[in-house]
Structures are given as C-alpha cells and as structure tokens.
Image (cartoon, rainbow, N blue to C red; front, side):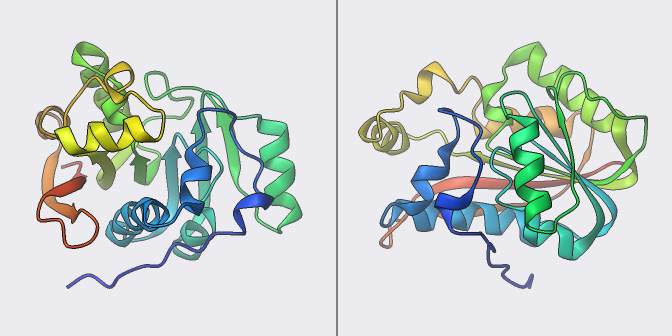
Length: 216
C-alpha cells in the first residue's frame, strides 16, 4: 500500500497566485478544501522521486514543498502565471525552482529530460487531437521508464452541479472525460494503475481519478 502524503502548503494568503483561473481559494473552503487537497495528495503519493520533475500547470505552486523533498530539481510550466512574481515568492521562501511560461502542447525542454511529470486537473481541458498531441509531447520529454501522473475529475452530473454552485460551468472548460484521458494516455504509455477518490461524507460515487503511466 502506498503511504499517504500530506500536502505541505504555505498559508493560502501568502501565495502569489496565477490570476482569476487559479483555484487557490477553493482550498480554504469547508469540505471542498479537503477534497481539493486530497486529490493533490493522491497524485503526490504516486511520484517516486529522482533527479528532475516537471509540473504542468503549476498555478500557485502548491506542490513544490512536497516535490522538493523527492526530486533534486523541480520545474514548472504554466501559461497564465506571472513568472517574476512566482519566482520571487519561492526564492523568498528559500526554494530554487525552474519556472517557465508555456503550454503542454509545446514544452521548452529537450527529449527524454524528466524522470516524472505531474499534471493536476489539466488534461480534461484538452479534447480530441489537442489531447493526443499533448500526450505525445509529454512522452517526448519523459525519460525511458519515466512516470507520468495526472489527476482528472470524474464526469458526473453531481460534479457538474457542485461546480455550478461555485460559479464554474465545467462544460465550458472540460473537453475530455476521465475515460477519454485514460484512453489517450494508454495509446502512448503503459498504464501502471488508476486510483479513484470518493466523494465527501460517505458519498458512494467517485469524483476524481489519478492515472499513473510510464514510458516503456
């Protein structure tokens, strides 16, 4: 059994956020905040460590304290973040991370560079050929036997309703279901395992899926 890993965040108000699209505020809400942290923790628990890790869509960098305990060098890429603000923030915390602006479709890294790649709630925002192109690009920068770990929400009516309460219409932003993401990942990588996250308060249905794949 994999050991549970706790998300080691700074106080939320200290972070230099990535703007209006950053979900940081949700981490402070009752019940919902626990679910947001738990999905990150499930992803972190899959990572095995090594020289280099990339987080795609790092946002506020909530995972960086955990990642720096497992990897010699942490890289992050995000299309919306203020790089100067984020870099200054983490340097002020004594954390040396390599942050860059860009997208998963065109990663500014050489072939076979990373031991691990992490994507938390990123791939569901891509659909069709764009999703397949992103996964081919991820495979390109992943070392042989390197691991790709992603988290995506499970496409259920209850989840869509819950996001509407938060003022977020996921149908306008999510273009792939967890089934489609898994299928696309399986076309270019070998599946290691899937981990499902149950809903709150004993809800029987799963609401989040973590996929662990490797390059062979």
